Length: 626
Ligand SMILES: [Zn+2]
Ligand SMILES: [Zn+2]
Image (tube, rainbow, N blue to C red; front, side, top):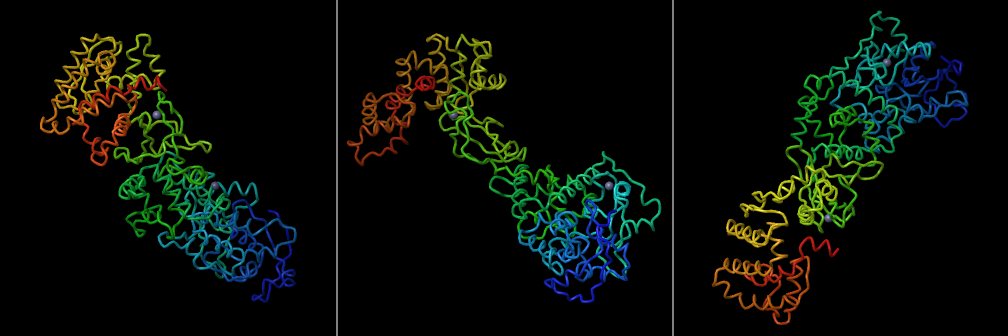
């Protein structure tokens, strides 16, 4: 114990003394003992009292703080500037240092509304007492029963006596829901010294308290690391300790920022969907499973208790909230207070845009060309996700909010959680490589960029033969209008292709042309090598599907457009071809025929449809032309 200044206090007669009376200030010199690490200022004052001859606590508080005693003195003492003016010149203490290192302010501050935290600190520096709103906000949350007696850790007593020659009241032991010592992992002992009471002779140091206690007072009870309750206790104690040590240095005191961070955690866990709705009933259910009712009772966080549904309430701004509630919620959401505050890089929830196409076959692979995404919510896993579609190749993948991390400030946006659709380009590449006799499966896997298992699954979806190539299989097609489909590789003869095509068409009588085209190899082989035959077959088929009376009305236009289509060049988009065709005839049509009417009635224009089909580039050709 080092005594830096040994003048006995000069008891001031005039307790109405004004702070700006410098001469008077200079005359006031107080007996002072240096503070110990994590010691409550109250504890230092109590140790000073042990060395002094004070009649009662009122006189002591008035001498040291120039104020009357009040309930929150032990936790949030006020008028600290007054105290400092009595210290010897050249001492290292500042009011910020005392507040940050020796009061409970850093524990409460981060969870208070910004202006309240600021006022509270001002009151602690130079107020006669802390004002009611600050006091209420910090200590008097009506739902949390304040502690009654000071607590101590037998391990700390032993250690402090050896390091500093005496035991003292630690800050971290005097917090609600801290029942174990974070350093020694043993249960705290409850003393007989009352916290909120100052009177004739109530202020008491830990050493004074221990003098009157039995031997049992220092027998440690170690926590059981396998016990779930004890694990929660230790975690809460560690987080409280971190808050005391760091709460004042956090770059903000702002409950809105706290709520924003809570919302991100809740979103990641699926309790807030992407429309911002809180799934409160699921949240309550899971919370009750995580903290058992007996544990909730011990931690004063019963959802059914006097606090009511506090869980719903703390997630809204402007209500009084005790830090212990946040610690419990953050813990429950699988995080801890250190991560919660250090995690400043996270964006909500997939920012920043745009996002890359992740199809290795796409010319836009890994280029950020996707500018919007669709929101979704998975009921099975209760996680929100976004689905990202490349407008060029159709490849669509999902990211869930849980896996979308930021590493060193960079979004991890080249990961895929689930592929929704591979898209026509990827499909066409699979078909192309599948039919290439010079490629083995390993090479195809490398070219397509997905694991072998995924590739085999997709080739089966496309109705491709199982590896090794050559086997004919019968496969149900995804499109419900196609019942069965038979497909083989590119080396089928034209005669076999024709037979297969006729079989597909007979079995799927009602299917549209675009559905029939999904018999990939057969259709594309016939189109490339046997177009005249396929064209005749399609013409017969498509005209046959239309009611003759209706076709009579459209026939003239159909013949005209089909003839004009010969003037157009090849293109990858059917819509563009139709537009170009319309433009060729725009003058003649005038206001009689609109483009939209052609687009929506294309099924009554079979000859035109086939003429355009001839001009449409196959997916393989698109890649070649790129
Ligand atoms: Zn300890
Ligand atoms: Zn793409």
